Length: 210
Image (cartoon, rainbow, N blue to C red; front, side, top):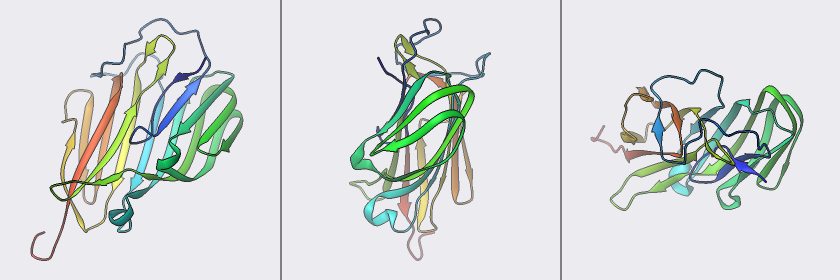
């Protein structure tokens, strides 16, 4: 029996393993932000997303993604939605016996403590809004096993072109969910349990409308 751990963006990636040894501190999926980290190390999901001028035309963005502190289990997999992912490439693994891609799925075997995996790909995550502008949709991020959802850390950095101006981000900043704007980048970081969706909205910048 597989159980889901986390997603990359727009409901398109699931991290699963076959561990059945978890029964404590599990939530039922309702989102809960954690003002402070849990006592023991938890899965860290790191995403770097680049929106290019071409992304404004076709919706495809560049994704560099890493998973740290992967739970030590015999087998696991990351499964993307095939219509929203392309050009998946594994670029780094640590403390993982074997890792390979099969279509829109990354399979892992012999996962040891402090395992790490990094990949790059293109994902279709940028969507035009009816009222104008664009929305970058990410999630659900989650760490889920057979008996519920567990704490995890998500770090998300988005770089966008000068043609775009940031409107807002959702959820709003609060204890356990941090939003930082720096130049042409926005960074989000959160400790949470349950399912986390993020939405970041932009508007186009035209001459005379900085």
